[in-house]
Image 1 (cartoon, rainbow, N blue to C red):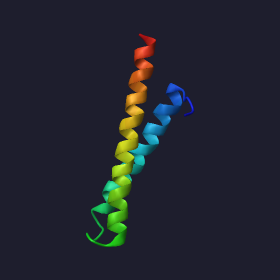
Image 2: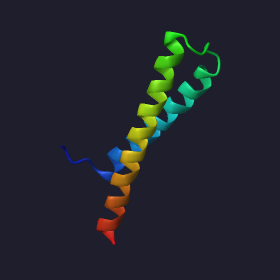
Image 3: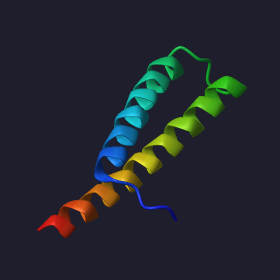
Image 4: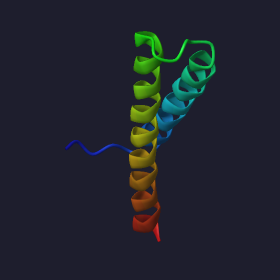
Length: 66
C-alpha cells in the first residue's frame, strides 16, 4: 500500500465527509426500496468506512510525531 502524507489524508477525509454529507441529504428524498436509494445507502456506508480508516491512519501519524 502506498504511503500518504498527513496533508493528503486530511484532504481526502474532507472530500469524503463532504460527499457523505451530500449523499445523506439526497437519500432522504429517495424512495426506500428503489435502486437509487439502495445504492446511495451503500455509498454512505462505504464512505463512513473509508473515513474511519483515514482517521486511524491520521492517529498513527500523530503517534509517530510524539
